Structure formats: C-alpha cells, structure tokens
Amino acid sequence: MVIVTPGGGVLMEDDLRKRSTEEVFADHLRLAGEHRLEDDIARNVAPDCVVLERRGVFRGHDGVCALARLLAEELSDAPYTYTTELVDGRLAFLEWTAESDHARVRDGADSFVIENGWIVAQTIHYTVEPT
Image 1 (cartoon, one colour):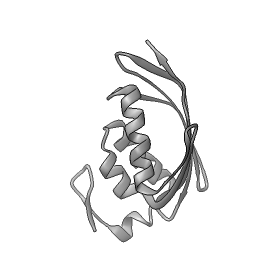
Image 2 (cartoon, rainbow, N blue to C red; image 1 turned 45 degrees about the vertical axis):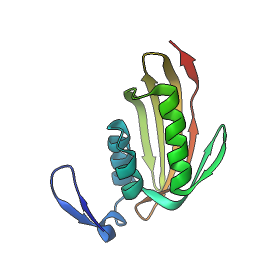
Image 3 (cartoon, rainbow, N blue to C red; image 1 turned 60 degrees about the vertical axis):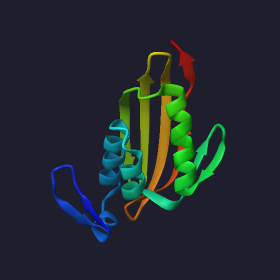
C-alpha cells in the first residue's frame, strides 16, 4: 500500500508501521479533526483494534466505523478542540470538547495503546449535552 502524505510525500505501508506513538497519535488527531475517517482507519487503526466505550466493546475497523457513525449522529460535523494531549511510551491520552448546532461535549477523554504504528486499543468517554 502506498500512502500520500498531506505534504505530497509518499509513505509505504512498512514506513507507517515504523512510526512512533507520537507520530501515530498526531496523524490520528489531524485526520479526525478533518473528519477523514477512512484515511484514519487505513493509516492508524489496527485491523483487530479493541475500543471500550460506554455502549460496549467494539472490535476492528467495523467497530470503529460504528462508533464514528454514533458520534456523527450526536455531534454532526462539530469541530473538535483538543485541550490535553499526552504521550508516554506506547500510551496516549486526549481530552477534548466539541460543539454542534444542537449538542456539545465538554468532557471528552480518550486513551490509546499504540504499537507498531497502529492504534491497537482505545477507551472513549464523553457526555453529550443539548445546546
């Protein structure tokens, strides 16, 4: 697989798997902020990723897509504001807010386990409030 970077460079699949936790995390946040789910999944999410969220356990790319659809229904294309970004070793932590015309999140918190250039596990917490 060949991936074209935002700057027009080219990365091979093997190069993507050599990225650091910081690089994967930054790429994930950039693509999520641009609402580019398919690109994010292809580049950053392990095929066997496990996501824990208040509605249950979601597995693989299909699970990540299902969660993204639920979030999109709750917040449409709301812009995200990342308030805290921390990385240590293979772990990353994100606090975020978002606001759409009809709803907002003020307490978003995600944790990530990143290995071999992939997000292999994630936890997600947020509360949707009407605006």
